[in-house]
Image (tube, rainbow, N blue to C red):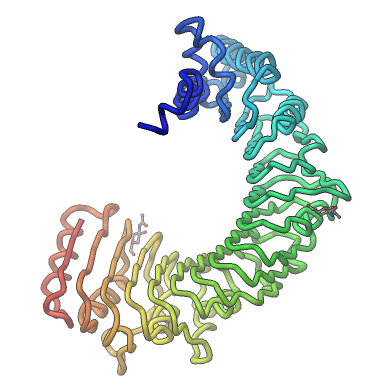
Length: 449
Ligand SMILES: *[C@@H]1O[C@H](CO)[C@@H](O)[C@H](O)[C@H]1NC(C)=O
Ligand SMILES: *[C@@H]1O[C@H](CO)[C@@H](O)[C@H](O)[C@H]1NC(C)=O
């Protein structure tokens, strides 16, 4: 209560308005004279084109020209232009002393990318702290260029750029407060822009980068001592496959999607890594080697090839800290990889097994769960929870579940949520079957949902 009484009436109203979406905050301006300009002091602004149409209407608008729906096209275009005029007219009048955030999200082909430059320039002059721009026009358009003032913005803490944005980093720039940077499928003005940007963000804590197949980033080096969280995606056909290097001594969380055919990364110096989320193709073994110290590991292999997945099998890697494993499968040949992970993780407490897409493969390439001679240590001494989920379940998946339930002596709870894609009879049959199997831990609770 005391905190509130310290505010003047107007300040309090502005505070309240800042919790509303911009569209609604603006609507309040018609309430009374006092309210008319209040919204212009709200420090957070968000303009999302989707908010001016219903979803259904938007999709009709997308295809309206091709479908000859000229009325839909002109109604929607008019609405969009009104929004654009509104921003043009009001953003320069905005009077909050510090702009906490500006978020822009546009798809419209009528949109002039130069406007983004203008608007960003305005908020940079208002000491913006968070800027997020997503420009993804549904027709061919030039990329939106950002003003050079952005690259010397002292107040900027968070910068998120997506899609058709041209990132052109000056040779000398300074973003001394930047802690969070996200660059998703953007375009870089030259081969060096990207690397230049990363080379001088001295307090950066979180970085998310998604390169796209067609961009000009050849070299990717993240050498940032302050970085705590890194998400990096490199697609199968990307040219930066020439190599990447990651050296981040403070990193705690690492998400890596690397579907390139041959591994060309150099990942080193992550002594504090606690959690890794790996989406891998052929180079899975290489990717697993650097996360042997994690407590949490989430793994999805998007390669359905018995040979590639068996290549990891061996006793040279141990996950001696691993407590949580989320193993998501795609395809048929996952079982040797999982068995190997269970053997290599003596302290595992929680296992999640998710059949995102599964099918059954040739028997000689799979683990015969019912004929294994030795039980992984974690099942005997540490595994406490097991979650099995899948839209569709494979025969192998059933064998695995039976094996885990039958051999885990410390298991407290098993949660089973399978077969939403199966017919109810079949689903019930699998569940009944699981229920009456032998349980290694007689007190284990089975939960179906
Ligand atoms: C790097 O950033 C610092 C401080 O943010 C600045 O003083 C320096 O000029 C920048 N260097 C380059 C090469 O942009
Ligand atoms: C479900 O699994 C069966 C057998 O594994 C397979 O034949 C079928 O194609 C799968 N269906 C879907 C929708 O994944």
